[in-house]
Length: 120
Image 1: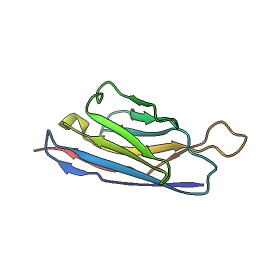
Image 2: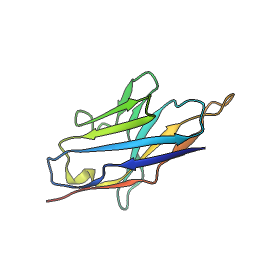
Image 3: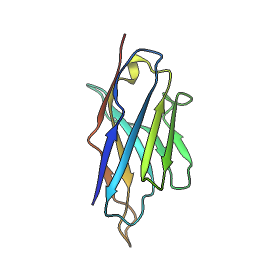
């Protein structure tokens, strides 16, 4: 089992920055893809960023150039640096990881989510 603990959410003014962290703990063989999703009120959950085990990243078009995801494999932690935030970025942000057991292709785990509110 893998437990994910997120931190770094909060209230920020438009144009501001926040950095989210998500630390994985528990028993796992390896962690492959790590990612961030968000869900705003009344909207479907959407992928924000992914970072693969080799460090390659993938971003939603709406955050490209403003958000940067990174990972520290030694700490089993993924980060999301969010710059130039605007009110449309307001949502609950959740991290997820793919940590399959041996002989399995995928097993996904989710964090509890952290609220990000962008408002003046």
